[in-house]
Length: 337
Ligand code: KG4
Image (cartoon, rainbow, N blue to C red; front, side, top):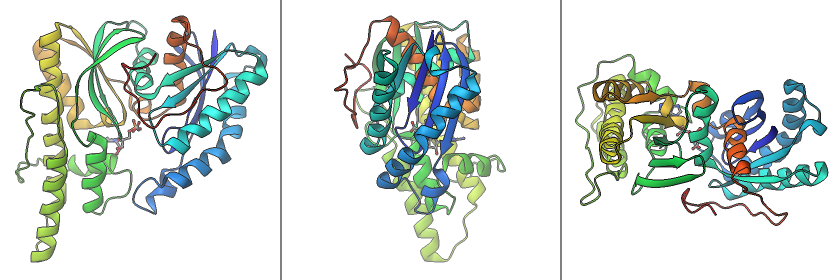
């Protein structure tokens, strides 16, 4: 079964053809990051306009790259939540028109479910149930993936997402948007161990996380140094910052594994590309005898293929959208109907 999948929830327009939820036939993607970098972050109105400009051409490209015609498409899948509302709406509107014109079912996909599904594309043997650490620009959560379409959030950030925190810290250090990758590369040039940064503890909710204190600590540190005319050791700060984020995530993911009894864990989302988090997760899972799946870097960030994969399993579960499908800025992944 060939699914034509659309992703436009933030600043990547992505269209992909995926066969049977596991094989990527094509993955056309256009990032707008350079455009938003001029403003230090995503400008929602610009994102929507760029999606409108790109989506039709990328669809032609995705079909051509896959070597299939429109008639070979059996269903259309689209991210309908969560994300920048105007941006998501472009994908939803376009996907609707394509599904209607081709006379095939339209399948709505939750963006974070898609991130988790990226692992199905990289690891053919992976099947639920397992535990997922979903860490992206807008979301940070530990998910009990009971089945392909049955999931429960068992821990989450109480404030900022891990990616948001990376982007903000990078910005005060003068690094370009999106700051996660430049921070990671800068930190790799240092051993760290120079700056003491806070670790949060959410009273009574051991699996929940908080990143706002860490974000504020870095902002204050940089501003104080500027005011005193001191020069910061930016590589050490970047390294210590990544360690602080990892210390927020990895022990909680391991605690969740102990509490649920799962022996399989996956990471998902843009922040899962981080080198410190990856190596800490690897070491912790190895020590605990847990099988860890880390998606290849290409599948960590937003892409259309992950929507095509999850779309396949939503389709098998009977999920269909009507022509009145709406886009949603927020939606819990366990509240998907
Ligand atoms: O999953 P994603 O592409 O988009 C959302 O669904 O939000 O995640 C984007 C986030 C950005 O905050 C970006 O800075 C971060 O992922 N990111 C990283 C790295 N690569 C991307 N954060 C830390 N280390 C990285 N290597």
